[in-house]
Amino acid sequence: MRALNKKIVFLYVLLIAYITIKILSVNIGFLTISNELNVGIWGVFFLIALFFTKGDYNRYLDQYDKVQTTFIVVVGYLMFYFLLGLFVGYQYNAYSLTPRGIINNTILFMPIIIFQEYIRQVLVNYSDGKSRWIVIITLMFILIGLNFNSVFNDFQNAEATFKLLCSEIIPAVARNFVFTYLAYISSCKPVILYRLLTTAVSIYLPILPNINWFYNGLFGILVPIILYVLTNYSQLKLERKLSREEEKKNRPITYVPTLILVFLIVGFVVGFFKYQPVAVVSDSMLPLFARGDMIIVEQLNEEEVKNLKVGDVVKFLTDNYYVIHRIYAIEETKDGLVFTTKGDNNNAPDSDKVKAEQIKGKYKFHIKYVGFPSVWLSEALR
Amino acid sequence: MNNNKIKKITIVILILVIFVMSTAYATLYRKLKIGGNAHVSADWKVEVTDIRETETLGQASSVSLPTFTASTVTFHASLVEKTDSITYTIKIKNSGIIDARLSDIVSTQSDATIIYEIGGINKDDVLLAGEEKIVTVKISLSPSTLEGEPVSNEVSIIFNFIQNI
Image (cartoon, rainbow over all chains, first blue to last red):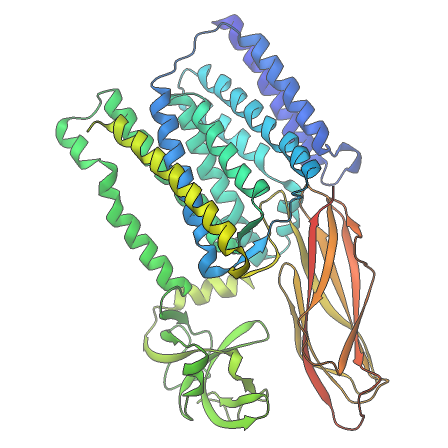
């Protein structure tokens, strides 16, 4: 066993060197690894791992069950993801779909998945289940998967950093912990299936849903969690580590109410429903509501905007941010309705008039102080 | 029914649903709302990163600050005479690992009195992975416009990039 471990140390060294070169290449141009070279490098790593560990013992427990579960979860998610486009619209896939493009992208993306996951499995197998090695392997693969050009670019301001954390880094952490877990309890096969399916969708489909960073991040975190819950439960049952009562209590279906609640809360916050919460960041509408209050806004369609009256408090978009002020005057012009707005606590009406299409909602009621966490986060990110 | 059987049935149902969805897509493709090119993954990241007003001539002025999303820039300019103009400078960066090519530039402007001129990038120009391009957009009045009253209009320009193969 000791002789074999030395070979695994060599693999670790190679991977750490690779990560180091990737990070340094952001500022040192000649260290940049081209996409084609990247495939070659991982091919070499794969062959080294295969050569050093051939014939060694591998603990594969009930792989087929994990592969099935992974297929169901990932395909179910991808269907949901694609159908979401019916609500948010679609965009054309930027990847080339010519025959040459498809072949090129297949060579560029698919073999690397197999090489990387085989190496992960080898490292996990020789970790003897020790948690510190599992964590190290997971961290290494998180770093391997990150695009450091994009990471360093986005760390330049707080808002971009926050978006990067939510849409890429935290999902990468969630994904890689589940991948390492699957490699430990099963093999690389379910992980390869997961990655191949998700990558295939992003490079082969002609259109993709036009979802923003928030939904990308949300799904990127939830899908691995769901996969973990299902595979963990079946693994505990397999190893007979649960009593009958614990088995009943830990069935995946018991998580469904929690999942529904999460979706409802998230849907409410992001404005999926008719009513949406909005945090107030200034005192321009005192005494009606103040900075830190949370107001509930009814989202309006085009027809409903035409029925607005002077005195209504509305939410409208201006210069890339939302304002909530009272309607002071309404004029009918050749381009449609134009609104003059004013904050109750301001001395004069707002200088810019508001067009009908800028109006997004109408104030319904407010809850005092509940909006402060959002206000603080918004100010921290500015 | 045992767990394994349930999973097999679920897989068969999912595969059938995929076929149904593919057929539905082929039938309804023209009715779907499709626009622009998707930001698909961390590997593909071509986006506008900055926009500033850099030159103003004559009585031209910005009605509101220019804004941008990943692929779209929006300006709201007010112009009075044909010699008036505003120039905006835009930074477009390819932070992904895939080389990109500008497939087209689309304007959502509805009013033909205001025209725009793009400098620094042309259709089919390539933006390599890691590269940044500085693009200028000059807004002015169309030569056929009658002078005198200020003309104000919002213009959105979409830069559609695709993989360069």
